[in-house]
Image 1 (cartoon, helix red, strand yellow):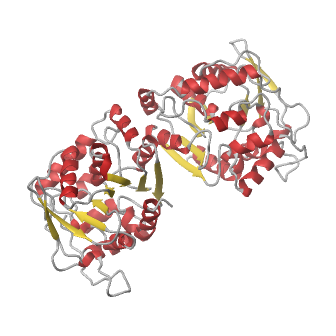
Image 2 (cartoon, chains in turn yellow, cyan):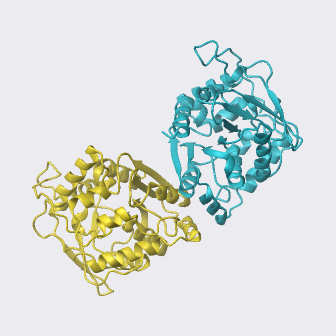
Image 3 (cartoon, chains in turn red, cyan):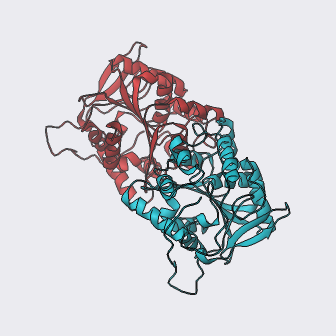
Length: 297
Length: 297
């Protein structure tokens, strides 16, 4: 999304030696499917945590405060899926193919077993990855998520797709979907935007209109009602952490409940006075919850 | 259940004029199906709140502290379904028939539109009432609940049915299922038992072994896995409040999530450090939550 914001210099660690997500270089991974995937890698030990981004988001749309908090205890990798931002190829029109494209990236990086955090459409891809190749997923975090085939979610409501589905979106469009109208949430939203846009050099390539169209086709296809599709969630036997804002207008908390009720071993948390961007608004609390979940605490 | 407890005199209102649930007379309602239903009625204005009791429970197994708190703002009616406690007839072996039996009681009382609070097996009956005759249910409260056909709930785990399914149960059996092992939960459990057994005169008739057998048949039948049965919850379009303890060993909170994800307009609350009897342990908080829900706050 092309969001204009006040650039300002922000560092998230007192220790000046620490590299923040905002300063990580963009890298490219050449995969067997011919795609060059843009990514950023915090480094670190253990099974990496791989991040799957929201609708129209690229590497710059992860709040550095969140990634830095997650990376305090582990290696975190963000990447653009095929056709998105700085990656080559075309964005597919189905979540199934997005999952296969993501698996090609994991293979290209030779990551082995990973933890996966999927956000919004990224949560759809994360579920599909775990269903398609469960052997590579250790634990799964689903943020602002919904299961394929659930009732009454065939595309987003007009106010949402009208705001963040336009050719060029403004900060207020983003804030209206990702944050609630409360002063504290809006302030948190502006701070998150400030952090995302503080990076001046080596920004990621903007996502294209073709990506927007293909991703929204995939969102609507995911929302074609089909009660039987819910049953497949029963095979997701790895631990899953499901999280959402209590006032998300894009993907209602209702669908987090549904995921938590269909997935056998799920932990659920709904964050107060928060919308689609709850994980940026409550970045410290959410990162601590993710860390506790991944560390099995 | 035959639970021996320390009888002591307790009143739940400072105002000595107020009648507490523990002092309400047992009454009988003669229904068109030939059953005489035992019930207690707090009186009061507006649409009444009708309570549906748990496995093997009779009128004495409602914590008076909870009923009194609920009755502060509205009329509350507790009754024994067919074959249970002081009611005549035989306990049926299916939830479907229990719902029809409950509807016969509502008709006998000429209650019209009601709010329904179903607890445990009573929550199964409450769902079935709302599915069978939605026109009589204004709002629905499902406590320690689960939907018919959900996976992995075919009867209760051995520790649970072994404790509360025995011919004669002891207070510790009850406490082990309805309360957590924490000191505060156990203390709350002993206090709840004390309140339930403080009533010395005109106690309800004990539930029979035949009722226990029939109810457990109904519980197991409700738990026969059938994914398609979940879809019917989509027609429950009235507001629904779903509540559970976070550590309920009898009906896991997992199934509260599932209900909240399948019912279109559901409010969900999971109470901390609480088991099957969360609504007795947290009686003041739960009653306030129910009141806010019923008053649409």
